[in-house]
Image (cartoon, rainbow, N blue to C red):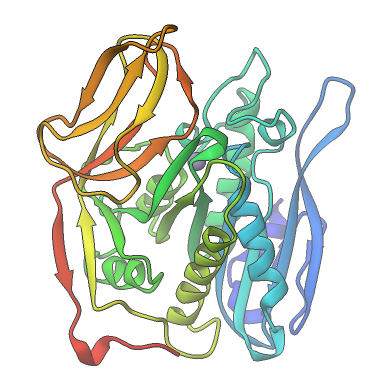
Length: 350
Ligand SMILES: [Zn+2]
């Protein structure tokens, strides 16, 4: 480990990054794996990794997908990013972890199905190398990111039964200067930015990396079934936007003329069990009292009406699953909205 740490001290010097068996070579795309745990029969849990190393040195951007095991869209978008890159034109490195939570992915569900674990990887960072599997995997990822990457992106979706409005989440509670963080966030070209100042997800990867001075972004797009090709394109293009902004890819990021900034959120759950019918869709604007959806019982009679709580202004996500027991994760609503206009001179594409 000491050797790896020494090499990592200046990843830009050699232009080559090594993660597990994936050994970067300037001007090439390579694949490999990082073993992070084992199943009960000793089969390794490997993170499948691609490293795309530019011909020229530059920053290292680390992108994780499937931190939650049922968020398949992020993996498919990351595949598009890796396939579309030309290392000859790049200055710097993309590290792509295609499946960051293999036990959850193998279980085709959000979290590790092991009864000794069941922890959410969105709440497991920076991880612990001597505890439960999800924490160990988080610790392995944290060690690598902190040693080798200058930027971190976590690709999320709503999973297999929830659909998200596209947004970029980042937190100003760490040590990354706010002006720089805002500028980087806009480069994704995604209109809705969730600019956290309350440390709303204290044990999320992006929060802990921001605390360590690594700008981290949670890029949330789509979800539900089947996967929407437009979602995959949007998420892939957003990653390319940041790669342009930090100079790994040539060209300028596509900035939007304005951004909607969210500062907080509310989750709406149901008291009565039954059939959920949404009255809003992701991205809709709402206010206190707006109708959000209904719950119908087994006979089809409406037994609960869900309305927006105080402060709610935009629908960030909606459950796509038709039935819900009490306490269903039915809607996410953004609060504290502001509109940010970007100077016309700064707006533009590649
Ligand atoms: Zn997620």
